[in-house]
Length: 477
Ligand code: FO1
Image 1 (cartoon, protein in one colour):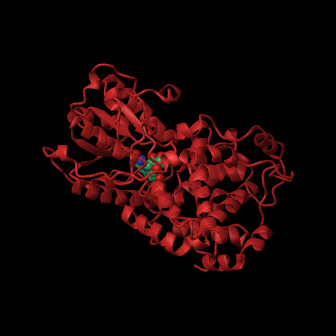
Image 2 (cartoon, helix red, strand yellow):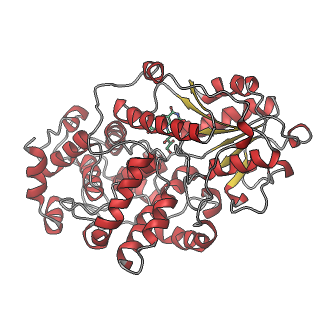
Image 3 (cartoon, helix red, strand yellow):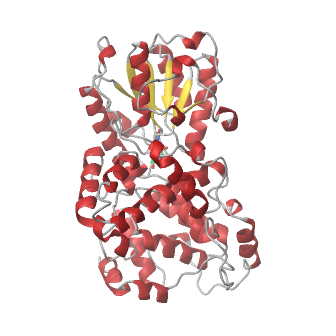
């Protein structure tokens, strides 16, 4: 179905011409329905999911331009599910605070925001009928659950002949355009992405007051009721360092550019240094668009060229490689999604004696023998964000200290999804899969348990940074 939809020509009524919006960001999810849908009389609905921001959002830019072309109203809806993977209150509260800001910002633009409770396929069709919506625009995530929402909603919309158009509003280069297959590694996707950057790394037109909305009533959301609808673990609490929402995220971006970017190239692998962007929580929920961040970071090219290149490599090439992997590999979160050489080598070493074996509870409570591992785990539990360098070490040790690679991967993903604000993201799955089953990596010297999967150890960390300083910071709390 995805293959058929990919590159499908959009009918005339869905095209935007003479604008800075590039139609290659769009594809039609529903069947090309001739006749009826060529006349757009009712509102355009932007169904927001992964990209939870008003400005710098190609999904909303397209929706508004489409609504203006036909002279019709514009609505925004978010469908809130009571649970999502292993997300807890920590992540839901971050998301819902950001959405409250979205609602306020939309209100100023006279665009009504509707929070619907439940899965899209169950609550959107009746909403669409009630509001006489003519066209639905959605954003894109390569993960199984949101792909399912889009697919099933598309099937419902086919029945009532309302077109569903998808915009990749998260990646700078739409995932289906960057490559049409699963890429082996950063080196195989890098040029493809860079080749497209001049075309797609462009300034966003603003989303403005919607003049065709004058007859609509603006009702405010009952956020208390929304919170009550959740069925998530409320014991994992919010973190204090990360203020949710686009405004706070843009402030973090500003601070990164003016204070930390200059150190990024040299110090990004030192967990004791504050030189990362720290933007991944805002990126994950789409509260800040990566494209906005790259446009801004690039303006520092002449001052800090090495850091700017290093950041583009991580935030664009690696991030879009993660979307590529999850999109083209349905087993993106299991050992069977690894390359054959990696599956073979892990299998050959499955019975190797493990020096330590820990349970999920022991990992979760930072109770291993390794003070660095425990400190990294505590950083994640307390702050909702583990330093990028330690995420690799942390996951590789889980492989080393569990009875099988399957069990190791399961525990790593469980902890990542439960505690990281930016968990449940293609980046998170790819991080665990890189560490535990070598995706996007190559084979290394064979050794016990790991086989040919790249090994990392405590001594190596000691050579890279002051391990003691990091351990003292977290283990004392
Ligand atoms: N997207 C939605 O459309 N509705 C939700 O209720 C929802 C909850 C949610 C909770 C945690 C989380 O990390 C993401 C959540 N998302 C939700 C967003 C979205 O599905 C994900 O960000 C992407 O799938 C990641 O690619």
